[in-house]
Length: 262
Image 1 (cartoon, rainbow, N blue to C red):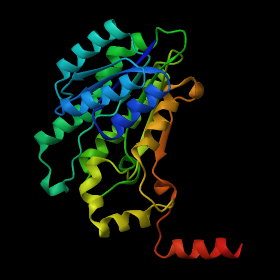
Image 2 (spheres, rainbow, N blue to C red):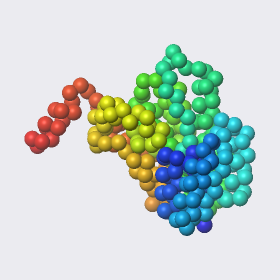
Image 3 (cartoon, one colour):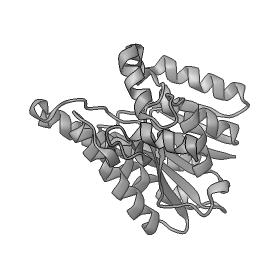
Image 4 (spheres, one colour):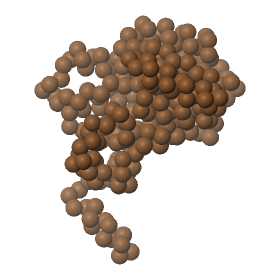
């Protein structure tokens, strides 16, 4: 019996990751901050899949509570995988940045994952096969985006943390990160309900469509599995090709014409 811990597992990418991990044979602890009913709904789905599951309230901005949670779950479940999914958005331009709110965001997006890895490292590395940590970052940490300075900085710090811990915890624990682009999560539902904004998003994505949370969950489950046994320190975009595209004016049309004439 192998346990995985998924923070922010009540909805969106966290719920998709929990379901994908369960399909791979993991029992799952999901944490939630506010939506207990949604978290219990996820655990019901996991139970229906024949897996053990548990929903635990955890406020990631309370680092003392995060450390206590890590001690408790380490002793009780001895997890094999940790998915640092929960995060705080911060869609504010530089002139509107509130430094107290920014400090809280950094605690949630960067320091809480660090505290969880620190607290769970011994348990993750105590199995016959290496344990796995998957940090959920964002394409904006690599590409930049208006109004996302604090959020992007916190996720870029997560990249440095991922690569450093991949070296420090090897060979007993593998550490990787996924960088989601625009996905059809409930967090993005408001923006994507505006057809003009949804169309603009699709036009920026080489694959021409909005991604599904399950597509991110599948990659998370892969990175947590033995199928990824030689993968550590990787930052993997799940963005339909956004970070691969050099968005020069008019370039997409010329590229298409070149491809059609080849």
